[in-house]
Image (cartoon, rainbow, N blue to C red):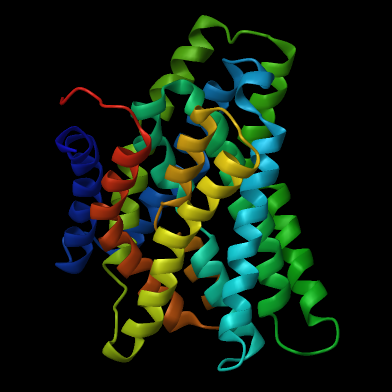
Amino acid sequence: MLAFLSLCAPIFAVILLGWAAARFRLVAPPVVDAVGHFSFHFALPALLLRLMGSQPLGQSFEPVFFAGYLAVCLAIFFGVLAIARPWHRRGAAAAMGAGAAMGNVGFLGPPLLLPLLGERGAGPVAMAIMSEVAVVLALGSLLMAPAMPGAGLRAMGRALRSLLVNPVLLSIAGGALVGAAAIPFPGPVDRFLAFLGGAAGPTALFALGGTLGRLTVGRRLLLVAGGLTAGKLLAYPLLVWLVIGLLLQRDWFWVQAGVMLAAMPTATNAFVLAQRNHAGTEEVSATVLLSTLLAALLFPITAWLVTPAVAVP
């Protein structure tokens, strides 16, 4: 257990640093946004492009794992939506579903999984991003839109257009094509991608902390945020273990990867989506903050449960 805490502590410490920098106004909000923009549009795509392109497609993409993970993701999304619907409007209920189904797999996946699973872990990270970002983002946009004729389809159309130019998704697709063609990156290109991609972890984590520094958890929201956090950090990983491990009987590598990815805290993208549609913003904001705080303790425990012993750094 100490080994997993040692691996995870520096990562969550960078998030804490970003939080403190924003909370005590050591950096201005536009600076935090710029760091996050750099990570999302440049560093993270370079990292994923290189990792996906450097291994055969059959090694990085497992269709049964993808189908199982996506099925659990949708079950969590629609399950939470159904539970929340009697007490909330459809848009707010859909926002809560997204809060329980969208994990921070893009920013936290690479720094947390790659040290434990090696470069092969890029494949599960990519499939989790496609499930939780691409699919849930499109569905959430449709269901959170105002209840006016055509509003949902217009919102979904905007979401799909944004996905077509999403740099992370494009890098995953490009890396998959390179891997399928078995074309190695030239030395200078590989070193460039490695150098640029090396900045993905620190910048993403700092920007995440800076974003959390602007969020709050009101007392009246603790019950809702606590329920959504339990769904995200407990129910989601458990269902992934049941479906991928027991039902689909995948290799243990895929079970490990799926459970740890499902145990990621709620993504800030869920908050942005809720804010854009004016639906469940406060509830999702509180869930992002609370789930990230609790994940600092719960993720090492989850990793310890599914991963063989590692050496203490």
